[in-house]
Length: 248
Image (cartoon, rainbow, N blue to C red; front, side, top):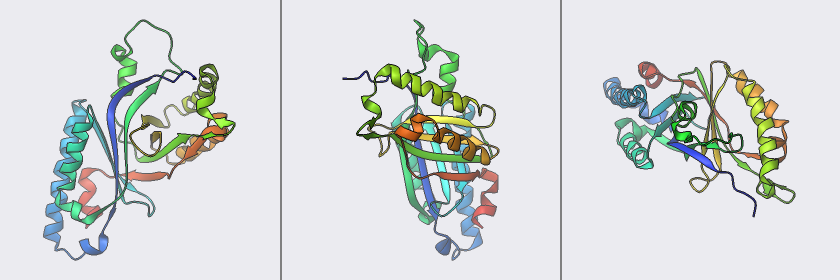
């Protein structure tokens, strides 16, 4: 049996995607819509308070295209807290006009492929902690997609020995480092938690950087030979103060 990669696990992650039932929403009086929007704003303001205290984080974006209209990404120390938050969101009045289109459950993850040998407790390392318990940026654009490592015939990632996987992940990681300052990347592990094995969430103030980064990675062996990808969701930041204009 090959050596399994060990992971450091941080905050639990929940991506919720919805389509808006615009035809039903248009039948409501403006006053009723405003009341629902105000309630949603209060919900997001509470998420911002948690974000500011570094007790969790979140992002809220308007998805471009017809796969969804909205994506809410929430991070918390426990899955129980995320479960409670999802229930709270579902009880908002506006949820009657939101049609679930996709969801993804995972946990912020760092693997030991690129880790350096050390006697230090990694959970006490400030750099590691910032990656496990991150402050999600308020960048203009988001890109989220799930992915697997291929397990077919000679292209089976899990049949490679640890040293080969380390070598491949090093070259793969170097491509991402080339986009430092342009793209923020968050990897969430979902083996045993959802359909795919990882979720990737990217943030940037220039959406074309998503295309450039992912296209370049396609030529790296980790993606070209072993990568399997789900749908890509991209969108534009939707601050709480812009919700009235969005829903009206």
